[in-house]
Length: 465
Length: 105
Image (cartoon, rainbow over all chains, first blue to last red; front, side, top):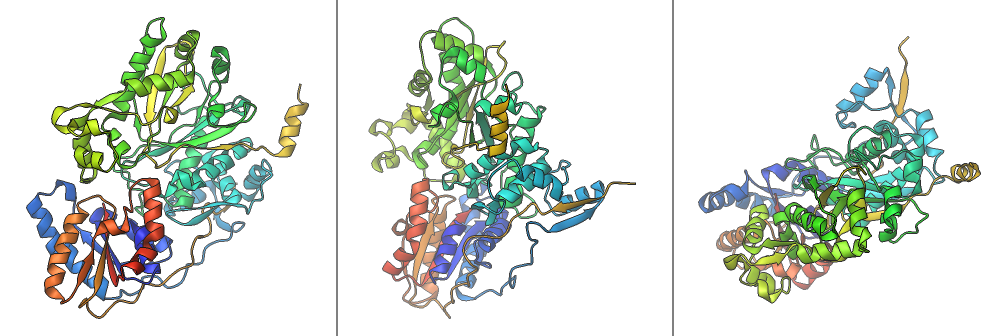
């Protein structure tokens, strides 16, 4: 919404943005980062979706309308004059003991609340030695802070997160994915509070000691944990997504960072399925990083039986629960990216009957349905959006037979496309567990990049017996 | 002796478009043409209607261009990008003087 406002102002037309109190600070930060500071705001006090119609009208009359008139007519004074002086990439910003450094980073909101490894020039240089990319290379400009994502800042934040220098190519690939416009990092502070998840698929995962077995998504193993932490730190420091003080991260309840998930390479070989990186369009020999949003996680579920459908039926129910009423997004934003993590034993049973991952996708697409009345009710509850099945049918966003879904509770298809359902094999090989995940429609859609280690490192690997 | 550290900056230079100025404001809204630009959430349509009713009484000769003319600035990824990209052109086409944009919540 602020991006539209800035576009209007840059076109020479005065604009005022209507926001709720909760978004006031965030709006100012985003407008400033987009280069047009001081866009006037008309602030609606409180939570509009819990106000009665009478209270809503009264607040609009008393607060929003006067601010709209003021903002359109009176040019506000500039709050900031000129850009503040900021450090150069190779400049020392703090000196002192470990406690001095940690306190300094905490005071400046450069940490995530956990201790960091001090990003000294020597440590950063060692990370940079593990990539052939130029430290000054700009991988993208990340909103909402509009800061340049460089290879150098990847190294700095990688050090801070506790990564090993060998992870540097993984980190660069992750930031390239985040910087892709399709990922929509500018929306990573939206109120559902989604969190990026990194999925690593390929031979380097095992070489770098990523855990893909028991406790695959547990904090603990350094590779999985520090890479997951790195992504959150990078969003905080370079994209500028921070609940405090910028209020650019508006996750209403939010969650912690996700440990990076590694595909279980041995299990995928055993069952004869193609690995996730090949699903994503890369070569089998590649190591590929995929970053995607996750805001809904299912319960862990056990399925029993020796036939594929015994398990697929349970997994379909699991996916139904995790998609839940969020399937209203399908009809508004027209994007949806769920994925399931299958334990190796589950994948083995399904594959034993000759079924492929495509068959799993098709089964889920055909067997995941939700009550149309509940979907409509939830859609209106999220954002007050007018969500009427007949209107969606008329606009070609829903099939004709859904027109009476609210009155009848007719089941509506909850998954959009089989090829948008991802399947990853990981977890304890000795148990029969699966889990399902959902991202926030087109925000944080899966984006993949090939990992490119430094040439010297690749040569050294090839020389090893 | 306690170890001493020197550390680097974890952020990055500001990028993107160069800073811009706010557009000049009119002295009053008499005869002005208003664009309503909406992200299709949080009852913006009701706020626009109320603004139109009150503004029309306060300033003579105002006119209003409804939000569908400017697309959905928070729809699908394609809709959103298309709507924002085409805003300058659509503002010119409709001869817009000022814009009311909502709603962030």
